[in-house]
Image 1 (cartoon, rainbow, N blue to C red):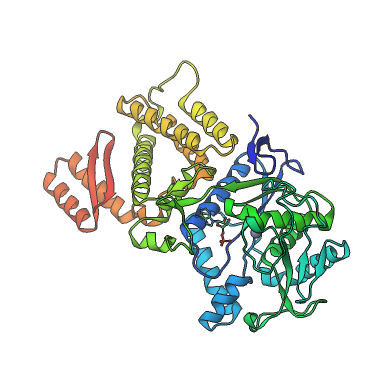
Image 2 (image 1 turned 90 degrees about the vertical axis):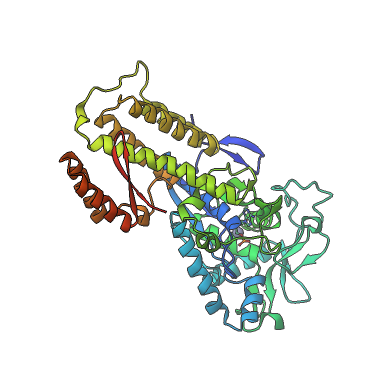
Length: 473
Ligand code: AMP
Ligand code: ZN
């Protein structure tokens, strides 16, 4: 099967054929760094990480660009409120963002362009739009994109021509669909902007938010590139405006595949700063959940389905991961055990691994069907456990399954235990000494060693496969 995605532009599922064979250019709208991102935002970033990792799993070389919006209405307002310079104010949230990406095991993009470092490219783009006659400078000195002079406006959200008539002008970065309007490309400086301005041929000012993404995506990926993503709330006006600006300037198709993720919701409502119903990753880490558990919650729901975030979903993620951890521990024991070349559990048709690998890949190729991909993984866990119970797996097979899981984890990034969860070497040694004492029938020493382990926060469970260590409490 070939890789296919649901393209928001055509509203159809299409086979992915990249512009350049074997390569995929990907632009993912990044954070507006005026506060700490909430986990609704991270739903989008985890979906994009799954997309990126799936492309790589399918053999593509990925160039991903994620912008950092460090100048717009919100960043300026918030920095002035905090009494800090824009650069100082946004830096703390850039740092927080990168730390959170790491906790969630999101693979770094190739480029993280900051808007404030690409003003020259933005000015150049505005100049081209003016030269092409689709933009104009208004009485307020700001430069606006003219909807009237661009008849293709509305193709992404499917506006009919009657709807896509400009109702006037908007200066704000964010506005509602009901008010299709000439939007600001370059905003002339006002008192509200304080110290934030750049010189341009149209006077002092700053770029509009939508312009930023057009200028930065085309700089790093070219006038036409493969995939552009974001949350559904970005479709209008942000992505619609990006298409208009880019295609009007270049006369070429801007993006070939648009992918949008549905919202993360809480009690039926979109999680958002303005609703006040949000959690940050830090809130959840503070409640004792790990980045790995939160990643699992965000990953496990198909990107086009609304994700209802609850505490229970975090607890469910914890037990799903525990099930995998237990399986991996059993496999490691079998792999290292004496029965490395024991009788294999030959199956008549395909082996466990072949089946799981095929199901896993086919599921991802089908518009990132993560539910099916995880089902392939959990079928492997179930069938593998059954064989281990029946002592029908030798060390070689266990090792094959472990390397397949490693392979799956290049996409999922949830199977490896967090550093803190790994068994330290000293603890492992104590457990081995206890095992030796038991073999020597020195039960007093074995008990003393168990007590010592408990004191260090580890419990030993004696299973049919041998002893297993778990952090206690
Ligand atoms: P922003 O910082 O508001 O520009 O948002 C950054 C990214 O997070 C964008 O792709 C948004 O579409 C996405 N986003 C914001 N809120 C949510 C939510 N509740 N669920 C999913 N994605 C969201
Ligand atoms: Zn954007």
